[in-house]
Image (tube, rainbow, N blue to C red; front, side, top):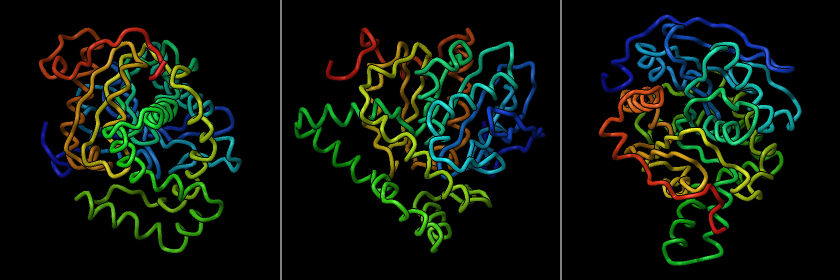
Length: 326
């Protein structure tokens, strides 16, 4: 696969709308419908457009589906905060999967909040039997992350203190988002214009945000408020038998790569890879690498041979799926 977004060959994109409860989701499809389906879920404050370079590469061999989550892009924007609770996001994913791949489980990949809600889906019941594999990029499971923090607070060794300090320095946006009215004011008073510029300069990328960025940023803040209480739940409440691949950017300014090293406690089969990239750079700066890893993982789960790369990335089984510290 070629390196860099500029080298990606454009492919035909079919657009449709999928109803999920009281919302309509803007869905994009690429590639042959007879091939295994890969569903790509974007994060905050993005739209499905953030996946375009990777989606075009994957469409050479897969049926690739991406969609604007509720509150973003061309999808519905519910007004009530509780409409953005994890259960509703999982129901949206289920509706999309059933519409685009009714007879075959899909391979799920999520970035940022797309990964967070992917974890919420595969550790719940709404997509049971409909997801064959899950690739997580820069978005931890909320319960796993909360458990990770609590375990390090209980055992404040020098290493744990350093890990916590690194993550807390990255989590300033959570405090920012928790103060009523402040994020809305900041986004409206220039934040929506300056933030993309800052990210592009910091990570060496460009063109990653959509024209609806300010609206997506404002409406997407409800994701944090609707799901914040889940940080208090034990990690043992969020386990899955779905094979998981974690791609951890080592230069991520928002999510520490250390927290994903504990994920083996909660999953039956785990592969973990690191990529020298920032938070958005993980999907925009070198799409060929990430597309190749998603494809390699999906093919293996479909029955293909285990490659040397996957063999090196596989994390040894840690026994029963339990919360850290139990």
